[in-house]
Length: 286
Ligand code: AHM
Ligand code: MG
Image 1 (cartoon, rainbow, N blue to C red):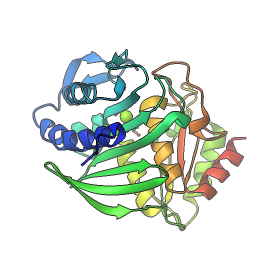
Image 2 (image 1 turned 180 degrees about the vertical axis):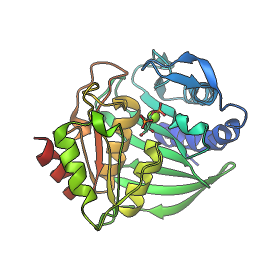
Image 3 (image 1 turned 135 degrees about the vertical axis):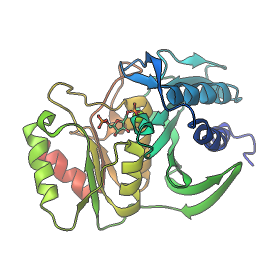
């Protein structure tokens, strides 16, 4: 039950759509003949997930804008005082080919997009793993659900990052990292309490950090100083959730949530995880 609260309704609609998105992956693993606004080739499943979510979310009373990594412009769909919803419909879709983990990411903002992360009122992600789960942050509380058909079952309430971090995963090619980031990565690798976990889908990798503690990064690269991931659809939603779980986020110098966006498809260097590791990262990049 959502009691007419549009934030709850958006979360419920995304939860219900997730099992359909998952079913829709079958037969949609090939590339579509199109690129997204970031210049990446879209898979058929990227387009399918975006259209399904656009249709559902833009019909919710109280939502005025739908924006997505997969479309150039936002859809305006209600009176301008409503919520704006930004999504990455299928995160990690390059994993379609090898049939590995993917996700759906969402941020619910109370300002028009592009908006800073301080305008988020809730965020979360779906993880298409061996089972489908949803992690969701609202009012400073992080909850995890299992999804099956139309059923959403709460399995964990008040989630916080474990105190003793266990995993790390860093994206991008090592030769493209800055010297400062590489030095930090080498230090992390040499810590025998930490082990590498990298699956090529941000949501899979960040969900491991939420579960075991640690750090995920897709840093600035030599030829891409703002990294790869998108602020509205990836950086802000995961930063909001990780911070709500007692961790930290950083673009290299401060919280991702404090960044003022210029464009809907702005990119951002992403580092999220336990405070202590993000502090060390910021010291290393200073
Ligand atoms: P996508 O949303 O188009 O799938 O791109 C984002 C993904 C992240 O999930 C992941 O961390 C990163 O791209 C992996 O990039 P790469 O293939 O360059 O390692
Ligand atoms: Mg993505």
